[in-house]
Amino acid sequence: MAGHSKFANIKHRKEKNDAARGRIFTRLGRELAMAVKHGGGGDPAANSRLKDAIAKCKAENMPNDTIERSIKKAAGDINQVNYEATTYEGYGPGGVAVIVNVLTDNRNRAAANVRNAFTKGNGNMGTPGCVSFMFNEVGQIMVETGCADEEELMLLTADAGADDFIPQEGGYEILTSPENFSAVREAIEVAGIQMVSAEVTMIPQTYATLSSPEDLKYMNKMLDLLDNEDDVQNVYHNWEG
Image (cartoon, rainbow, N blue to C red; front, side, top):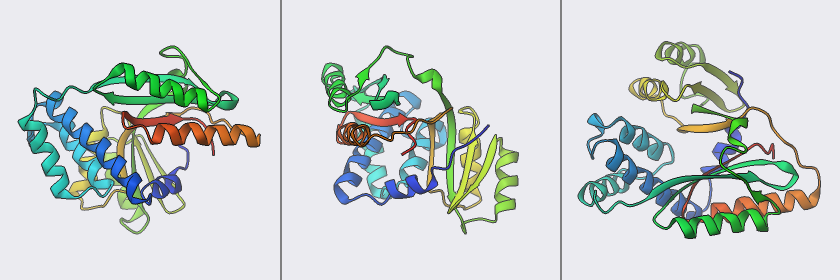
């Protein structure tokens, strides 16, 4: 499975300002709540979905006490967790493919706000499936150079079921099937190796470039609007920016 170097972009994302970090933690809190409700309760030992969500939180430097509070709150209010997961797809300027994952307690509000971001970004929302076929759903784990010996890490992840190991500038990208993601992530965790990021994500099969200053302006505007939208959990696109 071919990969694409995004290690530097992920490191940049983790260095956002406090306001942006607060939005990330809010989104992660929602993921924890959904994992508790739909994965089998608040005990990560018995809830693999929660265990993966916790690992993602730790990779984003979410404090342990914040993680524990979110889990306890969700476990105590399990019948009150009413977030609905939905996905929107469409096109940005220059035909860039965009997928937006949402967790919301008000689907009408979320749809209107996502559509607004597409419109203001000189793009348009499409029908379900219009661009998702251009992406592969994979487990993606990033480990920084120096946190592990390259050969040992490659053998460890291969034995655990990883599909690909890609050295990059600054780190290593490990790709897995969604089904093997938990096993590979746990093998790295048990080995005491710190992960920069660990999540099941959507990776484009091909990438698009934008050369027009106007297209670049609108694409960045769309991404900023989506990033500032509380209901939006993840945004995937094939823009090689």
